[in-house]
Image 1: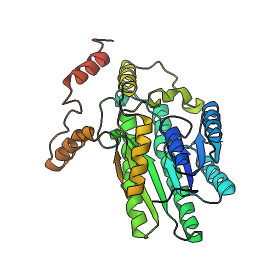
Image 2: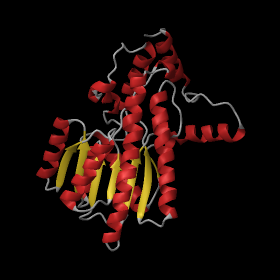
Image 3: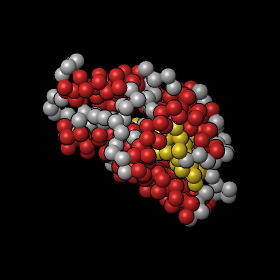
Length: 303
């Protein structure tokens, strides 16, 4: 996708973090915007800021776990702007801890947003974009699904999140192949950021009542939260940086988008483990002090 001027971008999780920066970048490129989020006050603030900068933008509350709400988002987009060209299936949440300690509610919440949100976005918007392509000469479209480095490696005590993000990588690769199979004028990318200060570590603030956490967090869940908080807040690559990297990748037709190429060593090691039949290497093998710190916190040595 080379031409962004006057095209339409839909961004889930668009009120804050990466989504907000995608919206700001898209506006700078002359795009019309549809922002979806579950947090009304933050969504209203972001929409107002963008309108103040002259953007053509609408905001809509959308729980991406619910297919009917994603369909309503697509309907609102077509009613307002008459087309869609760029879709960011970006909404995401996180939950950690030892994998056997995660509750059914944890799984339903994280998989609901991170996996079903992308599923609904792909199944609804891809068909819509294909229809738009029939009506618009020279149509160019692109879909970006936000995964994570946790979608290509498996950090300790982050099982629910890892599973969800691995699913997004698989879904995105298949989408890429399927679009090519039918010669669609639509590209696809999967974004795999590492630790970026976005607020993902505080996603529990918007956890819905139907999947709320009833029990006290376990020691491993507290440890995972503390480690994630530290890693996210100390990230040196900003959300704005990620937006710039992502739009460059869209323009170049690049599928895999990595924000921290230096973190790919873990992926290479994992691929070697798999192809040689070697047992999985500890994800903290290169940072034993991190492994020991997490182990102490989980087992009580430093809690």
